[in-house]
Image 1: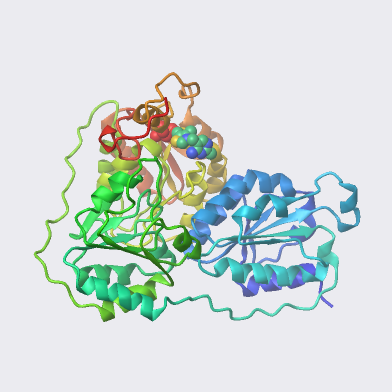
Image 2: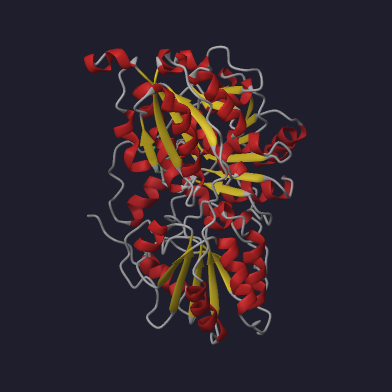
Length: 538
Ligand SMILES: Cc1ncc(C[n+]2csc(CCOP(=O)(O)OP(=O)(O)O)c2C)c(N)n1
């Protein structure tokens, strides 16, 4: 008879989980030993990076990735990546070792209570009751992870389980599509047909449900203005499209003001709404009819207003397209191009992104983690293809660098570019080593303003004041750190050196880091200024 280990590898093979992202320890060695030749192990030097690379890979492929962490030690270190997977709806099958079952009651070194630790942020967590239940638990976890909204699951596996005998685990077809109730969608159609001024809000779930083209067709059919959800973790509408009206602000009153001119708003694949600062007000102008169509029952339940409908976004958009009348109205003004930024020294984020926009391939993928430069990135980068833009949904820094590597692994034909703050890059900097070791050709652009500008902007925005410790980051040589991990890296201080550095990076298929000294910008907080009447914490 086969062993638990053999059955598990066969199961993983059948589930096409042959890439393993991890960081090993003693409790995982009985599993990892003699790894079959058709499997590939990606080593992350810290679990935030290992699980974060898996997260990028799973986001890129839209399908589960397999993670192997070390006992509770590394589940703790990797927890923020698991939380990111929860909020970004990323299917991860996370496993970790447990001490030998025979001595767990004695609380040995490296004993794990990881199942309890991860629980609020995974869809399912278990330590199987018997060794021979391990493969079936992994299969069950996989099916759960893939059900909408997708997300992480966790299985803790005692180290002595792998050598037990076990029956094979057959994989099954487990359908995961959930369609919205037609009668609920009919109500949306009815309201849209009588609307004079409809608007759509597009969210990340459009990409989770492969609904980009269907939503685009619906927007054109309705001739509706389209807004991206606040703090977008994906861009789900072509940026240069004449119907695109930009990104919503992440606070109640200003967001409602942006939508005040519309009699009907349909939110597709996003919460209602994702806020950052508390600026009280109506979530939507009274009188505007608000609908939300979401793949997340939790988002439907948490919405502050409107009618919520749970179901697959692609199917729902197709239904609305089929059952609504075409809207005629004067062609709206086309997208305003932002002003050409000056080649100032120090370099501004606006200039950096305008140059990058000119040089990058049209199918480039941006993995953004540059908090105070988000607004400039949003204004100056134009990407029109699906699966082109990713950002963190949870607000936990450390997402960007590993996720960029995973995305690049998932999309070897496209080039992934990771603009990352000089503060943000520190939270998972050892992932640079993984990019070098496996030659994953991400271009990292470190935006070096030597401080936590986004926090300073928040201080000003909310009148906390600037007398706060821990805001400055002097004396970090990021290009030097990258070189220490074996990555080719250059530092750019002058605007005229930016274009040659970017061109050199695009010319080679290997990872590069460009460290750019940029001017700090604390004028706005998540694109908001004092005009929105922010809260005061003073
Ligand atoms: C893990 C984690 N720690 C701390 C923070 C708080 N935080 C939010 S923005 C920010 C500043 C990041 O600095 P940097 O990447 O240099 O970007 P900048 O603000 O300068 O644009 C910090 C520390 C966070 N969001 N996540």
